Length: 337
Image 1 (cartoon, rainbow, N blue to C red):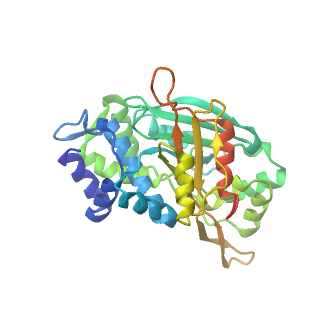
Image 2: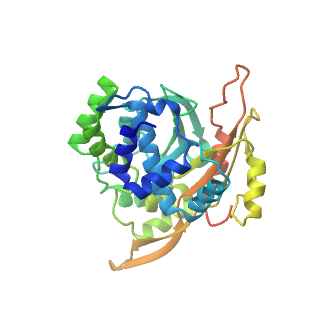
Image 3: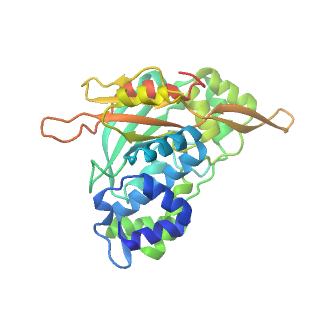
């Protein structure tokens, strides 16, 4: 990594956090390509954004941070394969864009393109995979899912609208202008990047007020995914380490008392295998019937592992799998699988 890019990450995260994440994550070689003495390429920006989001998840998911420390002691670095996001596709989200548009307006200027559509019918959701055009195997992908309120009962639709209708868009005009410039030129100045990246990272959060407990319970009764978005918003649902043998790793982590998913999800091709550490339990505030604040433990984010086999041409199978995704999504259903 160039000193220039390192300085940008330190400026945003602070030296201690930057040194920590850089020492534990394997960075794509393309991160240092296309940069100049004063500008950062879209590939470098995409990678830095992923580092910011990973650092945020590690701060919020203790078992994920413990895993990163565990592999660091073994001399191995994390290979960030992808991050997953959940959105609501509706026209009553306040000033927040509907569904995946919340993120495509960010991902596309950063160099991402949609490479796969995954109907998640059992969850009444649709997933889309976004890979980076400049280095698809190495720059982390994004898996963006939309939940479809119109497929739920009237009671759930009403509760969802009550929860999300006052959402606020965190992307300001300066960030939108910077993204437009990035889309045209493929790079932006260091000064603009330092201001833009934290603003982009802020989009990966909750953008609506504390939900009413009664609304949350209605959502939870029909969709644990809808309920998760009500408390966690558009945070990283999970981040994923790409490993050589997910089954062997799961056995090793279980021996180290990590709370592991009991099964391994295997794609239809047999080439993509996934498992995870169970979701963190986080305390979230809710509005009670009299306006008082009530707190409850709910599932937060989690950390996943993926093994990608090789295709005939020798490259990794970078695809996702609908059955795998629906199995992995169960990690936020409760404190157990």
